[in-house]
Image (cartoon, rainbow, N blue to C red; front, side):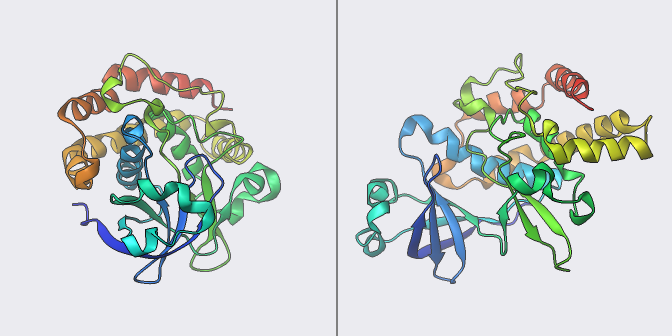
Length: 275
């Protein structure tokens, strides 16, 4: 069962990140740092719905992703926004999506493109599962050149954990009610499967299990998808009230994610990309 969503109020807005959604780095009343995201118009509300949905689905896949919370901002904080955040003021009056900051985290792009040894990654296999997950949720925003992952030290301080972040552009960036299971909505040439570290891990995997890699991926994929299907209604109910899916969107998303013909085609195309 999903734990109830943590809710908190923002104490201070510390910074604005210069990325597509201009998330805010905030400090909550519990003195914890979060990256706060908000939607700027009703036509792209599905982007924040995608963030909530993927936070839950990733957990069913066993892939590390930051804890999330419902963040609210009081009028006193809004009226004293930093100058570079003032244009966001009108969007901050509703509950927002918060992704908890990971201690010691750094962007993974340079390190995963050849400057880190696989032995230093405590969950290198998650690069492959994350690539397959992205294909399943039609997320082309995590690429070989733009990972949307973080690396942070594990508890021992000797290795790094890969964390998956930023899922506003999942589900092909379209309103969920328009998803069609006849389409994959996935460009495998851009997928994380083509990243240097992912390919290196797959080559190592083949050396140890040359005959079983595709079978292991297939069985692991179906097990993860089955778990998501069993929990789908719970996940939809878990979404904050202002981010709930309409009945039409919920039905379309279910049909899209759990279409057997789409899953089989997706696996076939994914296997073609394996080194």
